[in-house]
Length: 258
Figure (cartoon, one colour):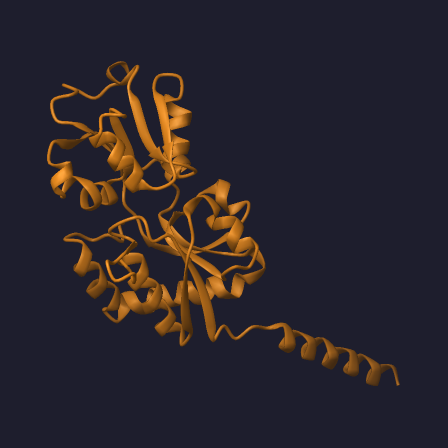
């Protein structure tokens, strides 16, 4: 009798587990849509960019139907936790601070941060040369954290909801410098007509303490299985050539990093 009860209990546990397990045939993905060339909105209103195409390719590799949900950066993690969507693919760096709230897949790209200033504005880059400068940065990003921790007492930090707002202000002369991802700065600003009078200055910034382990896909802590599926899908699209095809559309270098 006791043995029968044990077997029945085990069956009930297994049945409960199978009910709770999610197949992830449909996945909602939070994206920003305001961070070219990684994500932006086309004139016809459609989302486009590296992050957007990677999200769709990962969904295909997982055999899942993907729905993209545009979300302002400031609220992108709270909206994930509120179950507005199931994952975030928005150039979000994997940092220890963020891992306290969410889990991540492995990285899907990694690029350094850099400063930008007007050509001729600074002869050399140094802490002394930066003193008193106003520096624009997107609010609640790794770049904001780095700038605050390392230059907070030396510079006037101007925080913006989107990177495009920061570009507008440096052109208007309302800030002296910008700090952001080097690729976003290059493609989203320096290569455009309005960025022709500006340049990178200072070293590549990639200290793991602030910049983490590359950009990963954020998921809720209770959805670790989804994170594992994304990690496997990243390996799949890198192995079958899909990743390189998408990468080469936007970049002329290996954006995945070392």
